[in-house]
Amino acid sequence: MADKKKLEFYGGEWVSFLPFVVFLVATLMTFALANAWGVSAIMVPLIVSLAQSMDANIAAAVAAIFSGSVFGTQLCFYSDNAILISRSTNILPLDHVRTQMPFALCAGVLTCIAYLIYGFAFLG
Image (cartoon, rainbow, N blue to C red; front, side, top):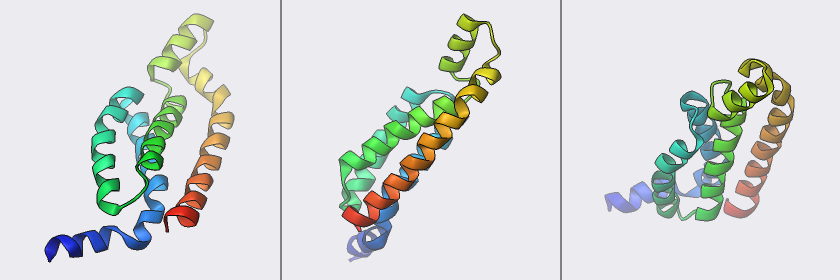
């Protein structure tokens, strides 16, 4: 009885927000840790089991993890990508992130909107 009640709480209308929330959490974790693959390795087992318990689309949840990880590493000025590119072009990592931030934010906002539309159109 308790398991069924728990699944009812996790399911329903909350399943519509799953890809959006996973994208935001993956972005924040990757920005904080500066390691896209590490965040993906941590989040995939957790989110797959959560998506299964919510009866959500597992592929959309995993896609949200990887897209959030890529978005987070594009915004992080101390990630390995930013440091490698700044070293090879003789600029500061912060300058590199400033030049790509408008493009990354545009893509991130469009991705958030797309995950919300997908969640409410197909999962809700």
